[in-house]
Image 1 (cartoon, rainbow, N blue to C red):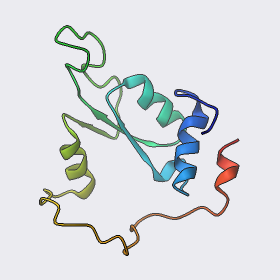
Image 2 (spheres, rainbow, N blue to C red):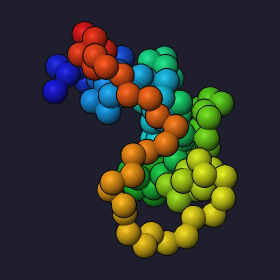
Image 3 (cartoon, rainbow, N blue to C red):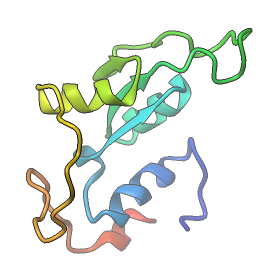
Image 4 (tube, one colour):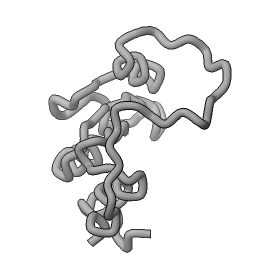
Length: 114
């Protein structure tokens, strides 16, 4: 889509532009420290989600956060709890007619794809 691959900054800014947001309005949640560093360098917020056995029981990399990422947790439920600052109730359905709050759409997303 962007003719760029992670960790190229265009991969991160392009993803934000597809959402019609600036990189600073987006958070990357990932288990790979290099990916989080590239996202931070592109202006995104970061969340380290530990996946200690992603590559089997003998995994040697990405067992711990390598930096002071914005959020450092063990699973995606904890990411959601940290973002909402309260425990989440099980989903009961989505109201697709309500726009998300706290976001600001950009008018020219193509400018972020270059």
